[in-house]
Amino acid sequence: MSERNLDFDTVIDRKGTYSLKYDFARERRMPEDLLPLWVADMDFRTTSYVEDAIVKRAAHGIYGYSEPDSFYFDAVSSWISRHHGWNVRREWLVKTPGVVFVREGIHQAG
View 1: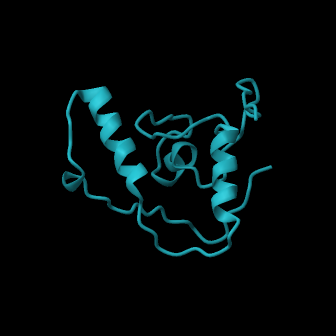
View 2: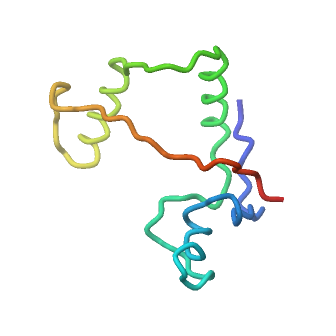
View 3: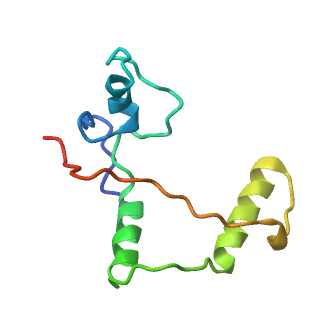
């Protein structure tokens, strides 16, 4: 399967979508053209490989709590080793869930 989202020319207007990167300034009474560079938020569509994996994972229709398998811990420890030269043991790693809140009435701009 080939990548379908390699389009870095199309501008995706994120204003009005509750995007922290683009909509936060107005809410905080700052200049609206202020662009926060501390926000890890993309301006391009994600890779189609990630989209496909999410769709495949969500297809079963049951959304509950799950535990990572050994592949998760292997990937994390391998990344830490490659990037930092630090060999970690699985028992040193603690998984913590992340939560991103969603506001009522979110709509897609456009």
